[in-house]
Image 1 (spheres, rainbow, N blue to C red):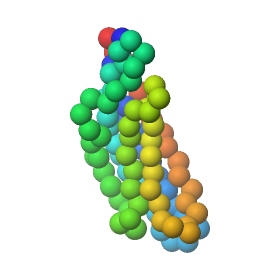
Image 2 (cartoon, helix red, strand yellow):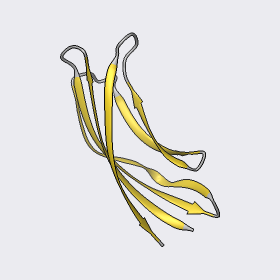
Image 3 (cartoon, rainbow, N blue to C red):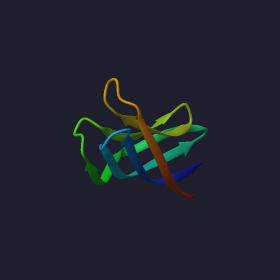
Image 4 (tube, one colour):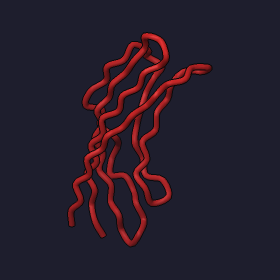
Length: 88
């Protein structure tokens, strides 16, 4: 059993002039092999040229997952860097 604090920076850019940057923090509890999110994801920063773009985190099948939302018919290059602190 352990706790995870996850802080992620996510950036995205399309092939034009649109871009976005986000900073998220979330906490997860791993109890007997079952990973659950504690509370909800906190968005510390959002900077974007397209309001429809978005990102969040959740627990899925025992893993922390970063989810991004872009725009229809648009290729967006997303990059993520996460720091994970693991505790008792």
